[in-house]
Image (tube, rainbow, N blue to C red):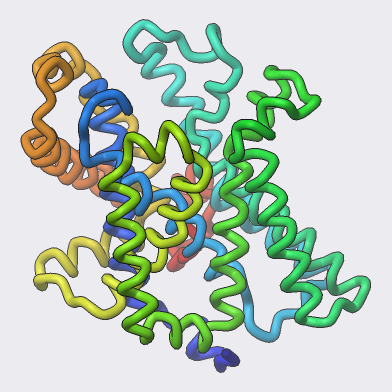
Length: 356
């Protein structure tokens, strides 16, 4: 769908609300996993939230990566990569370096001494930066060889599907002729999420068709039915049809979460909270690690020995809101100084950022 510049630059409120919900679920996952030791062998609502979390985040980032009417020549492509380096790669590296110094270990595991994959502890933002590079390179090459728009879409989708096949299908990934050290160094296990980044970009380009799908009640009902059926039979599906389960719940999860936040209005206080946090997702993601109560691990063994999903859920919600609030305060303090904002977040001035 073609949009004018005013429409392109205008913030989409339901996307901000969606991003606020997604960053809350990320913090909840880290509280449950790092602080309380909730793993896949323990009944928990976190593993359902996982299906609503990472893929939609990459989808939204790809959605805003697509620019209407832009010519992806060398100058513009380089400017995109430079901007994403300053706003994503650089602050991630700064915060990760400080985190490794402040928190040298998590439950006995020492950072950068036991596993090189710790370099990807902030895997989401590093992967997102790489995806912008992949996307930019494909757009630039398509521009250079003067690809038709439809062919360009097919190339993008093909690259996304290839990444998912190679790096998210364990039976393929495990047999790649690449050493474990190189896989860990480049974070190859995360590259499969590029598919959802691509789907987000293609959705923005063909937004009218996507809107028609969201307006199709039969399609939404089918997505809802498939999603819940797969999760009801979570254990046998994970054991016997893991790859089908994951890709299906990821795709239906994206559809359902976007549909919900687009058409259903939350109570005013929740709406305002999610809008504000949705506009600060990068800051929250980078800062919240410093406030994770790791000592909680030794106080919540009863939730691991005798799982109580509802109690665990409300504890993680409460702690996550508290952690997000503290992260926002730190973000506000840092951004009060333009010099700190530049050297820590790579921004010359505060600008709305829809990429994460």
